[in-house]
Picture 1 (cartoon, rainbow, N blue to C red):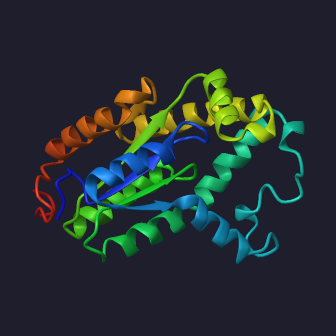
Picture 2 (cartoon, rainbow, N blue to C red):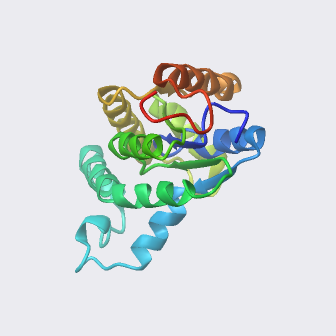
Length: 215
């Protein structure tokens, strides 16, 4: 189906580390389609209420997360991500029905959801892959925010939360034996992701677009 080692690629990572940018690069190379999971999150939140789906509305009523500690915001973000895991799988299941390579990227993609998506893809004879991007430096993320959102000023607290969340995602990905790729150096990121995913494909024995499950 594609010249890549994947049919559906999940790109997880914290806010401000460059997921959207590298996803666009990889999609262009694969003639693929990008699903921004943040759009799905917004739609799900708009269709639910805190009363009926409290796990999806942890940040409701908190006008300024900067008044919370980094750990408090991190815990709310992790809880939200876990609550959104069924939505991740819903997106993947839909893409499994389409013969166009797709990348799904977003802050709220968890390694646990990625592992289940890979399992379901294998059962369907499709190559679902996942990679998690990691940026250790809060200062680097602060600079990324400044370049992307100069009108918002220096977002140091938000960047510290993002760096902490990046560490959590990396730890969880390692626990689930999923690849974690450092964001820097940026100019080699897309190539490094490609190499990691090729190795994953060889390890799982899925070299073709419709490999036999369990081969």
